[in-house]
Length: 515
Image (cartoon, rainbow, N blue to C red; front, side, top):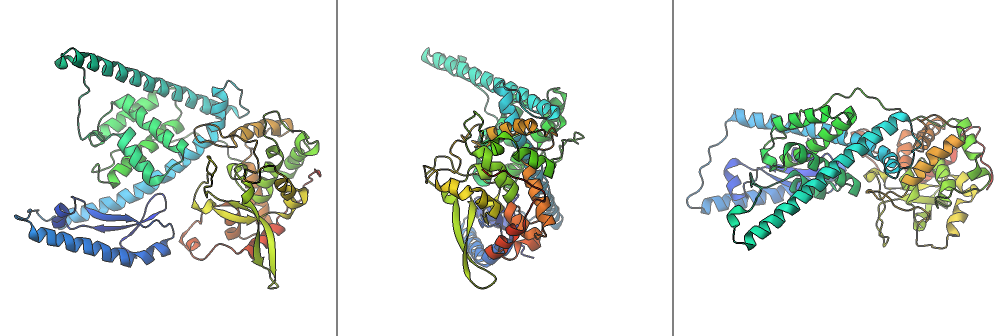
C-alpha cells in the first residue's frame, strides 16, 4: 500500500502527506501537503512518490527551522489520539462519499446530455421525435431552466437598480442612505469562487460548467446567497424540500440538483474551505425508471439501409450532407460514439504501420479519435482519457468508399463532415443529426423509442462478442475504461490484434446497398 497516494474522483492521483499540528502555523495553516501527480495510471503515479516524499520532507524540515527561529514559538496543544483517529475515519468516509458523488454526477451528466437535443427542439418550437416520457422530462427541465433564468434576470435587474441608487446617493452626499447588501462570512460563494476553483481542477465541458453554475444560482435564489462556510445542513434539507414541492421537477431532477450541490461542497471541504460537506447525506431515493437502450435487430438495420438515404442517395434539407450516410455505418462497424464520429477531421483518417503474424510490415487505414487541439476554433470533445484511441477501419467501410469520400473532400485540413454545425452550450456537432435520425428511423418503420442512434454502440458490442473479440479489445474500440485494477496493467492491444479483431466483426444477414 502506498500511503501517500490518493485517487481523486476524476481519476487523477495525488500525493498527500499530513503536516504535524505544530508545524501548520509555519506552512500557511495547511493540514497537509497536496500535489497533483497529473497521472491516472496507479503504477506510474507510485513511481513518483519517492521524489515527492523527499520534496515534502524538505518542506517539513524548513517549517521546523522556521519554528525554531520564531520568537516566541506558537503553542499548539497536541491532539489526543482519539481525535486523530476520529479525523482519520472522517477522512476515509469523505473519500468514499466523494466517489459516490462522482458516480451520481456522471449519471446526471449522461441524462442531461441525452435530453439536450429534445430540450433544444422544444425551445425552438419543434416537435421532438422521442418517447412521451422523454418529452415530459425534457419539458419539465425546460420549464425549470426558464424559471431559473427568469430568477437570474430578476436578480441582475435588482442589483443594477441598487447600484444605480447607491451611485445617486453618493453623488448627493447621502452615503448613509445607500442600500447595501450585508457582507457576512468570508465572502466565498458557490456560484463564483467554489465553482471556478472546482472547474479549474476538474475541467468540465462548457455545458457541464454551465449546469453547475445554474444549480449554484438556483440554491442561492431559494436559500439566499451566503458565504459557503455559513451554509448549514438545515439549509440543504430546506432546499431539498423546496425542490420536491415543485411539481415541475421529477425525482431525477431533484436527485441531480442535490448531486451537483454535493459535488461543489465536497470540493470546498477537500480544499479546507469548509470543515465538512453538509450536503453529504442529503439525497433522494429515485423510483422513476427510464427506458433501457436496445440493440438494432438485423431486420431494423436492413430497413434503415434500405431507406432513401442509403438506397436512393437522398439527403435531408438540414444541410448535414454526407454525415447522414456515413455516421450510421461508422457507428455500426466501429462502435464509436456519435460525437466522436461527427467531429472527425481529415487528418484523423490515416494509415498506420504494423507488423503482421508473418513478421511482415503492413499498413492499415485507421481513425484517430482524440481531443488533440489544432487551429480549429472548435476543439474535439471526448468523454474521458480512455476515449483517446487509434483504431483500424472495418474493411466494409473501405469497400463502401469511405476513404475515397475523405480523399475527395475539398478542404483537406477541415472536418470529415463539414456540413455539421456546433449548437447549444456544449457546442455539439451532432445534436441535430441525432434529432434527424430519431425521425428518420421511424420513417423506416422502427417505432421502438428505446432504439436510438446510441443503439449502434450496443449493437456493435453484441456482434463483437458473438465474433469472439476479447473484452479488452472491445473496450479499446469503444473507448471504455477498464473495470478493475487489473485492467490498468499492460499496454493497449497491438494494432496487429486490433486489425484481426475488426476483420472478424460481422452482422449476419445485413444487406447494405452499394452507393
